[in-house]
Length: 382
Image 1: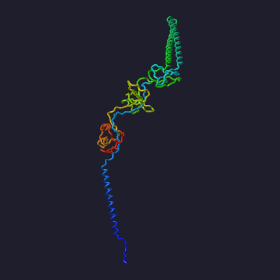
Image 2: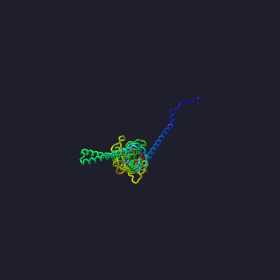
Image 3: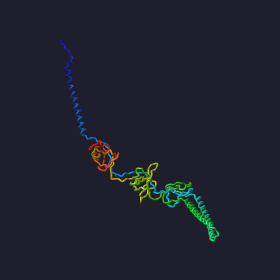
Image 4: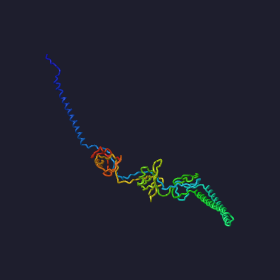
């Protein structure tokens, strides 16, 4: 019987069967690599063709202003003259017909004292004057009699001289009594406190029934006339206040400003605040005067020299060829480097006097990292 023998597969036949699969995988891998390379090239080409992104920058608007240095001080409107009225004699206050805010005229009675004691002093002085006159009459009669006796030789000279001295003393006592009566009458008149000028009552210092001392303030009257703004100046502005141009504005009315002039400056500082009291007279001819006690702002402006634009110091760069700034084109948002002329600068601010136009936008930060022609996106800084 013929038998077909079966044995293991031959190795060369197995390898031949796997070759198509390996070849397919190799081709697929190569295709993927080529596709990846192509995509990468497309992306690089896209990045190269796309415009660079806009860089955000902070900018400030150029504004020119006078270089005159100004400073504001808060003060109070006062009358140029304020009279603190008080009695010239002591006594009990029985009447005060005026109050704060009332208008008074010159000669108007603003307060009265109890006159009982003052009237008694007048009567006492009158009695003393009558006694002095009687004594004078007696002394004069004695002197005339002794003068007659002396002329006839019946009276010694020494006795006549004593009578003559007594007459002189009596005459002096009459004059003294007359002066005492005038003083008592004056004191009686001083029992009425009268205003010495037209004005308005701004404060009172005593009430009816109160016993006041001589000279104690009973009523304070602000006289009609010029108004002044009273402020407190620091030491650094003592010299500048004398040459500065002053203007006064009211907090209640922010509109018009009145020109003013320094009238009074305290010679020494306040021991608590270490400031110097100053009074500026308001030139308000032909205008309504401000009300007393209103809050005012006194602006002192020192004489300046032209106009400058104040920019942050960080906006200015200098690489050896002069100061320059980056200006943003308002139409294209492209940076343009421009040289500028500086008048001066401080630790924070640069004063530009030429090279920029009002309203232009200048980059204020990071200027050393920028270059001419770069597109930016503006972030307003002020």
